[in-house]
Image 1 (cartoon, helix red, strand yellow):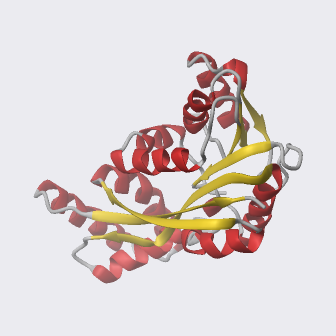
Image 2: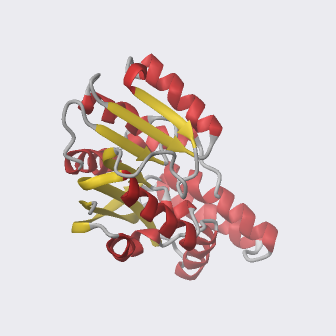
Image 3: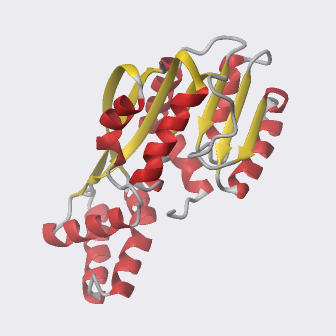
Length: 256
């Protein structure tokens, strides 16, 4: 799995575009006071706290993540935000969720499936459908990294860099496959929404510096091309001409 940075997750969660995607997901979950909701791939507790505020102290939020460091951070955040008595985080794999069949009223999952192989993404989708009661809402959002587009002076180099970045994910085009994957897994009454996110120069730097370095080390990108790439993008940014964007897909529906 590609390494995930907690600071990056928190910073991106505060951007207007990602906040809008999250808020739409929260609304689609149809949560009420006393409800039980599961966040699969909860990371450092960004969404479990927000979900806890919606179900209140008579409800329950369960965050699941395979990374113990993320779960530890999420537990600390829940305690700091005053929701720890009805919010818990557990270390577990998305392909084997530690909940009984139909235990949850709803399930939230954001930007997780891109990190799982296609086979494991299918298993995770089936597990999510299993733990949600019939009629309960499921909302899953993920990225299609092939849509990453950067206004660069050399479009051929830009495509090589984007391809290199996609190769770092186990399931880089997960967003485009969400509708068919979830319908095949048993989701009903599905709705699909797409979001186009404008990326800042700083975000692209954070995302692509490891990508370009890995490409150079592997011999897929020439060292001089790597230097030329960053020099050109920095110049565009200095003159206010930098632009990049990326598409995400959100699918909502009911368990059966």
